Amino acid sequence: MSTLVLALVAGTVIGLALGALGGGGGVLAVPALIYLLGFSAASATTASLIIVTATSATALYAHARDGDVAWRAGVLLAAAGVLPAALAGAVADHLPEAVLTTAFAVIAALAALRMLRPSVVQPKEGTQPGKAAVTGAGLGAVTGFLGVGGGFLAVPALVGVLGLRMKQAVGTSLLVITVNSLAALAARSGTGDDLRWEVIAPFAAAAILGAWDGKRLAAKVADATLRRVFAYTLFAVAAFMVVDVVA
Image (cartoon, rainbow, N blue to C red; front, side, top):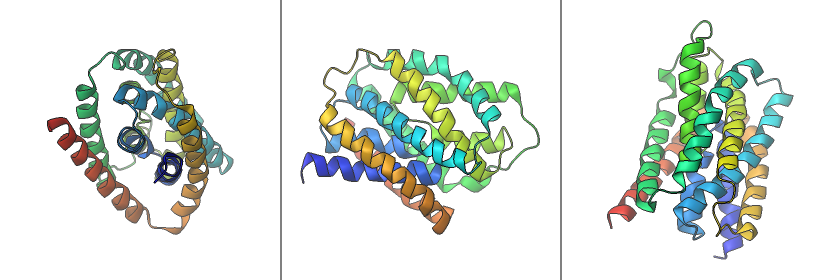
């Protein structure tokens, strides 16, 4: 299968995840870039940030148009994550590939577990600024370090900490992802010399189109079904990456 076709297929899947679930796309983007498209771990995280930023911003527009973004809550969480995202992004480029790959496998497994257990998070009354700041900082650090948006963590945080409805939390998480990804990208400026724009561009384009389809898919398919599909995919990705590091 040609590189272009692989990039288009992978981009579509990432876009569907972001558009339908508000997260999970970046966790799939990095291993796709490494194992399907031949990127190094460091370059894959930078390329993933480019793809996730473009896709999340597009999906954010679609959700905002329907009134499903809590701007004040989203800005609060995103602002807390800007500095951690930038610092983690600057550090990640200097770490060994085995460390990045192992950390990524752990995050992928945690994301899968979170997707399989969405019901454990219940909306709470009122916003808790202290918890929101800590949560936002953690999300920013994960985004900068591993090149993922952190939406799989942002959605339950927005429900459990800030008291948003699930549909609103999905839209708001895209705001957090977009801001954190931009901050991490700024910190990585000048890194990733082997970035291949002929791959990144079609990958991002397919992801953007997939995000629009993902939003429509979410309206037709049960949320639990979507989560199970992406969760089992993430478990498989995590297992493959662990085997690759050990081998």
